[in-house]
Length: 217
Image (cartoon, rainbow, N blue to C red):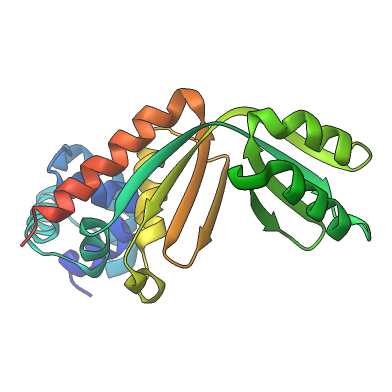
């Protein structure tokens, strides 16, 4: 393996760095010093900093000038925001289905989101329905979080066959120090639940990436 290939492999382990490379917002020499041990391990010998810097510049140019499948999906995606949400996680019991029917009757057209695990069920509702949920599941509540916002990314159907879209989104938010409280996906929709204080920064980070993707030919 040559230095360029080894550099690419090391950078691929940190998707959020790829994002900033594509925008050319990286101090190449500082990054080269940081990843030098990893590159040296992959090629089995010591390597000088300038060789890694050259590889990083080449990678930056490639990322900036080539539209990848993930970019194509993001360029055609739309984003929306919902405020005043709450999350509650409850234990799965034999009564769960009946309680979900009660939840459905209570929320009406406002709806709710469900994410079922092997032993628990996470429910996302409007804040106004939280007190009802607390009464409904009072003996089986595991976790409750209020003051949340939901970021909904609506993508083309091809997202199901395009690896890396979710990784790109989560890496973007990680780079902005935005915590994802919960994440759900259904067909072509990706739902990211974040704290209300992070909502605008979350939207802006994803919108910037969508605009960047639309600008790649």
